[in-house]
Amino acid sequence: MVVFAGQGDPRRSLSLLWRADAPPPTRGGPGPKPRLSVDAIVAAAVALADEEGMGALSMRAVGDRLGRTAMALYTYVPGKSELLDLMYDAVHAELPGHEPDSGDWRAALTAWAGEVLEFYVRHPWVLQVSQARPVLGPHEYAGLDTLVTLLRATGLEAGVLRRLVGTLFPFVRGSAQAVADARLAAAATGSSDEEWWAARSAALLELVPDFAERFPAVSGLEAEGPVEPYPGEGTEGAEPVPYPEREARETFRVGLGVLLDGIEAARVGRT
Image (cartoon, rainbow, N blue to C red; front, side, top):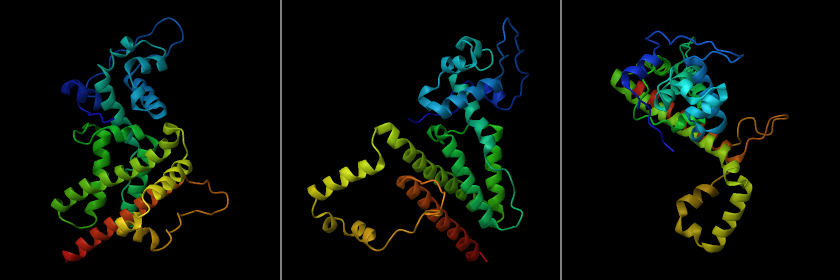
């Protein structure tokens, strides 16, 4: 399921994102119900999406969480499209905003990528919002500004930095998607990773006995040596991490290292 941001009225959406207009007056009423606000509606919608996924999101469901009807929400947020923009930008306030203290651009980018990965894993519904059309909200821009600031420390020219921004964000998002999918698979399919692999590996070996001959590169890679242990694996008291998530996280770590090696090579090449 892919959704596109920026589908509501441009003037109203951007006004809400940047809080450019005065908020509608809060309305008191009989009983102990809390007064509504844009922030309260957005917070309830984010909690709903975090817990139940994007498919559960509707104005009625958000209203139910707040003890109000969907109609009561429309005074503050015109519709679901504008609400999605607000949700997306609101959670982006969690992105790292610090600047490097040590001047070590590689360490700073490594820390940034790790924090952004965990941000996406906390809010997997964000990964369903297409990057084709940005929300253009303040927190989204702040996250982008942080990455550009970190990349400027590499000394590379602006044209290269633009493409690195377009490389790093999709790389981290893709890695986070793999982690999120690994966590969802067992609950969504009703079978554990171990059960799934055991059943299909056995069937594949039986049905394709010449697999190694047909796919020598893949088979050779699997046979060339043990996979490096996942960091922390085997540590006393450490929570076990399911195999697919371990693989996704280790792929992220190694892939990020190669990307940063490439940035270093580009820096050396221009000197």
